[in-house]
Length: 446
Image: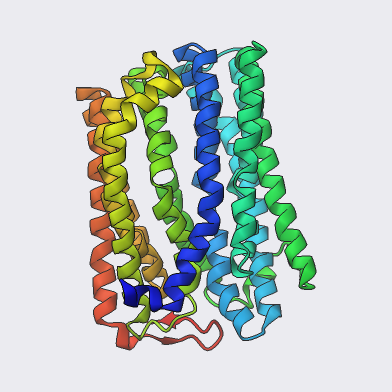
């Protein structure tokens, strides 16, 4: 461990994770406050519908979202290292164009499909109107250019600050809705305003940093013309888009499947368990966000990035084990205190789902390592296979065992994802001597 911390890149990953963690910790606590107010201020059925509306918009954004932040890091990081600001500017312009296009397509698609699904999700009458309005958030929810800009400019500190904007507004708004007896409409409005404000602040921060570096014109969207100057741009964005759309849609689609099979009350319980899972998995998520930009600066033919991935994964797995023990001891009291005794049934589901933390936290470096050696298609295959098997298990086990079945399916799905990612990563490590630097990107390719 002493040698690990002597590694400057390893320390950089932890430093960036620390910046993000400071904001995420506050955000997670505030998120629990807002959920607590909503859970206590609404009936279990209305609370479940609120979660369905939010997850529907989130899921729509995830399905159309291009991983533009990863594209910017992959293309822009080495360009800035060698002083090629024009190339970095083109990568941002291309990413911005993708965000605008995909966001508008996702918003229209979500609005068209929602009335067809409304009866299955118990969304009717005025509630359907609110849900349609909520879909207008899809363009900002699906845009990732701003976060990519801040990451390649090494402004993780600003990202940490921005991460508390949405939770603060949501917690304040939820408290006002609860104590002011504003009802269901008040809570929907709170969730809407908080999401929009957080996204606008992020874009403002990114624009300010680009202006400081004389690159503000990078926020002039471009697509086909710019893509000609970026080798393999379309191949990369389409592959990562499909892979991450599948991954990002796991949570929202799971909630929707549970809602359609078991009703809005069960959907609310599942959302509580998933929210607590998300909060406890933040340390690994933060390490991942700091890990990817750093390995893109390393030589994939050497052992350094692979060794870094092993070290970060081992550290993250230890955190995962500690978090599992913490959830087992304190999960039930936390749910009862924050949400009320009527939601205590969510703990039975949480006990099963939480074991997936050990697998997901240990395996998070695998995807970034595959991207480093230009094997994003292998990551896509892994995500696709595991998602297909997971959805089949989710439907079947939920139908047979109820919420407990949903938790078992989640755990098995996580194990399958890690396994399918591990196989091509080990192959890439053994063949690392074959990788060379790309003449334009200064990145590894086969």
